[in-house]
Image 1 (cartoon, helix red, strand yellow):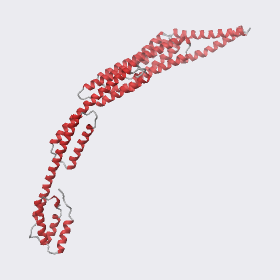
Image 2 (cartoon, helix red, strand yellow):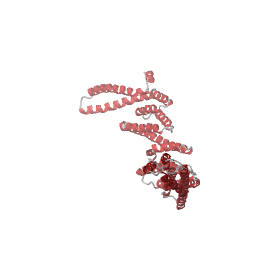
Image 3 (cartoon, helix red, strand yellow):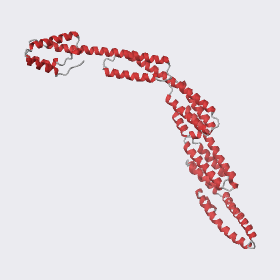
Image 4 (tube, one colour):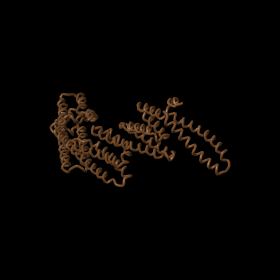
Length: 433
C-alpha cells in the first residue's frame, strides 16, 4: 500500500482526500449503531453518545492525516514540485505545495519547500507581471483556506500568509534595485514601462513612492546638466512623478515631502525648457544670418516668399513663448527685418534683370521692321508686334516702338488694311517679363 502511495502524483491528493471522506461515514455509521444500542436507555445517554461520536470522528481524521504525514506522500509532493520548478513551471509548483499546505499547514518540510518556491519566483525581476500573478493567487487562496480551516490551523495558515506578503515586500525592494540598475545603464524606456505598469503597486507604500520619485528626480538633475537634454524624456518623467504622487496622496495622510520633490522636478523641467528654448533661438538667429547673405538668383518670387513665410512662422512661435528673454526677442526681430530687407532687394534686382531681358527682347522685334515691306509682310509682322506689352518698356524702347508703329500706319493707306493690322495685334497674347 505504501509503495502505491509513493507512485501517486501529488495532484491525486484531492482524490485521496475524497476517498478518505468516503471511508469516514462507514466508520461513523458503525459507531452510531454500537453507541445507540449501548445508550438507548435514555436521551441523556444518547446526547453523550453523540459527543463521543464527534470526538471519535475527529480523532479518526487526525489519525489518517498523521498516517499520511508520516508516510512518503509529502516527500513525493515535494519531489514533483521540484521537477516543476526545475523546468521553470513556477505556477504549477506553487499551487501543488500551497494546496498541500491546506491539508498539512504545520508540515515544516512543505513550508520550507514553499519558501524556496517563492524565493525562486521573486528572483525573476524581468517579469513582474508573472511574479505578482503568482503572489496574488497565493494570497487569495490562503485567505480562502483560512476562512474554511479549523481554528487550530488558523495560526499556521496566517504564518503562510505572512510569508507571502514578506516575499512580496522583498520582491518590491529587488524590483526598485533592478529599476535603479536599468536607469544607471541608460535603459530609460524599460524603466518608464515598469513604472507606468506598476504605479498602483509603488504608490501603495511611502517607501516605494519615495524611492521611485527620488530616482525620477535624479534623472531630471542629470538631464538638466546635459548640453542637449531631451525635453520629451523630461516631460515623460514629470508625468510619471505627478501620477505617482497623486495616487499616493489618495491613501496617505501627509504627502508633503513628496510634493516638495515634485516642485523641484518642475523647476528642473523649467530649466530644461529654457535651455531648449535658447538652443532654438540660437539656431534660428544663425539661420537668419545665413539667409541675409544668400542672393538666391535662381529662385522665383513664389519660392522666396515661401521661404520668408517659413522663417516668420518659426520666429513667431519662439516670440510667443513666455519663457523667452526680451534680449532674445529683439535678436529675432532684428534678424527677421534684415532677412526681409535682403530678400526684397533680391526680388527687386531679379525684377530689374527680367525687365531688361524683356526690353531687349522687344527691341529685337522692333529692329526687324523694314520700310521696304509690303502690306502682306506688315500684316504678318503684326503677330510679333502684338506680343509686346508697352507697360514694361523702358522710355527709350517705347520711343522706338512708337516710331515703328507710326511708319506702319503711314504704310497702310487703306482703311481696311489698317483694321486687319490692328485686329491681328489685338488678338495676340501679351508677353510679360
